[in-house]
Length: 297
Image 1 (tube, rainbow, N blue to C red):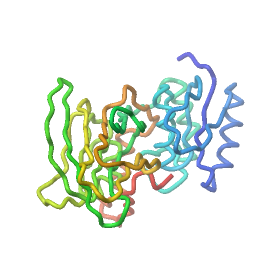
Image 2 (cartoon, one colour):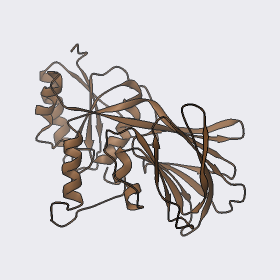
Image 3 (cartoon, helix red, strand yellow):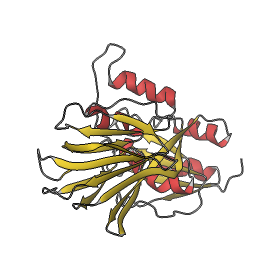
């Protein structure tokens, strides 16, 4: 594997271990002739080309990985997700394991998990007023507490067929990747998907009609949600739990597969199921479940 010998760090400065680990990373990588840079922590940034790098390190929790993926995914930088928080579904590499994981990657001998990402855009009239990528989920919800929103939702297949999924009155709607299936979606009654599957979960939040249930569609389908003109309460779009955008009646929210994914090093299916067993106490212990996707940054 040809290397530029450049590494990029995404660091959650609020984590107590972060500063010490950054020093260690810089020292070890510099000794191996790597230039090490840090990307500024602006969670509203979707895509800003950071330049050419061989490898990225996410130092934090799952939320830091979500932020890093929006930057690294479009420019094909693989990520080593180092966990500085509680046990995460995505950040699976411990601070003690990062160097060995890096050496395996450098020797082209690391386990790599390929995850799909999605893009969401908001169309208002003939203009696109918002666009973002995401690794976990996009949530359409009322800005206030306990207020229903009205959405018309359809899916468009890769062949161009339009399928009306329904007109929902609900607290909101979650559109999730398989990676995000263990976040907000599962707390709202959605299914848990293997993170390396290629599918999209469409999950109404507390629907007024109890027969409205979550549905999984192919990853190549485009999901379209229309905020109905009768909508009176304020509506928000939230991306990966980190970016918010106010919506208006008759806005069209389009969600489609991104033309890129994100490669996660040593955060594979085995690590995912290990975290699943631990967090959901499937092995018989007490549950440590925390379902708010992106909350553990």
